[in-house]
Amino acid sequence: MDQNRERFGLERRWSDARPTKTLVFWACVASAVLTMIIGFSWGGWVTGGTARTTAETMADDAVVKRLAPICVVLSGLDPAKAVKLVALKEESTWQRGEYVGKQGWATMPGEKEPDRKVAQACATLLMPIS
Image (cartoon, rainbow, N blue to C red):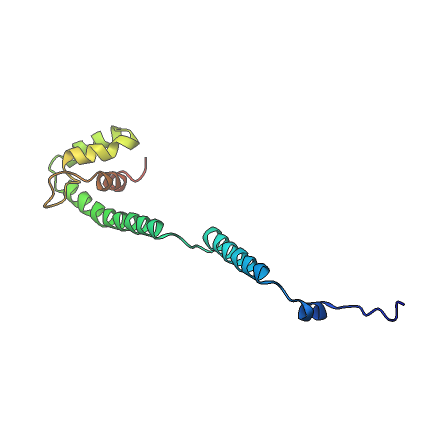
């Protein structure tokens, strides 16, 4: 009887398979969900809102990076720079940006108030080792 029994290989089973429409539908749904999970987890996919937020943050950081050296130049034009730098060094690290802003160094030409992020970056450039 064992001789009459034909052993089916994987290829033969695959060719003989006749999945139902329901099985095909759910397999497609599962494939789509799995693709999205992998894409968002490991594939680097992001939503439009996340991309927009990231772009805005990068743009703000680029502007601050370009304006901070102007702040350093403005500090160099201050006649009392030496005294103010000593006072800046005495300030705590997290208050240095506020101090720079109060001196007017972080107020860019055409602006009325200093930019907090520019002031902090400027303080970091003025006091690189703390």
